[in-house]
Image 1 (cartoon, rainbow, N blue to C red):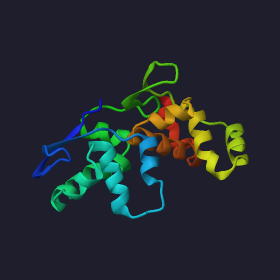
Image 2 (tube, one colour):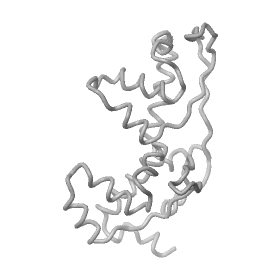
Image 3 (spheres, rainbow, N blue to C red):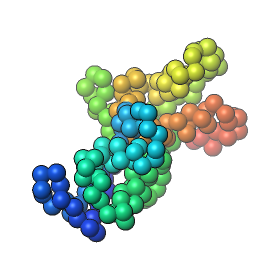
Length: 189
């Protein structure tokens, strides 16, 4: 269902190869690329945003600095949506239905076996899975529970678009925190 965002720059810039850049096309950001952008010693929002914009629309760091601030603000809005929204919101914006227990991925991924994965069947974790998760070091818990609930490997999780990753985290949070009555409508279907 992925439809790339396009942005026509109000103030075109010269590219590093002296070409005129008048429009940007935004690729989806993956969980791995998002993590990579957050790495490093400089936690400044502007630096992180520049990394994300470079990954998504292909601008070099020097091209990014030539952007007019209003164009930069437009890019920031698009990138912010990419990293903060989840798949159901993107489906809602497109006027499409979304199945929260077997979500269609916004951006299909290639599985470790070479097959295309375009949806995930989420499973509710058991008490045993929760106990194992709690026994792990803090840094490993989220990946463990996400792999269990989604059936995806670590490398497959890293290929998920940020919106798809965000949705799995929302749903896992529901599974870990909500009571059974929260899920009654789903159980009755």
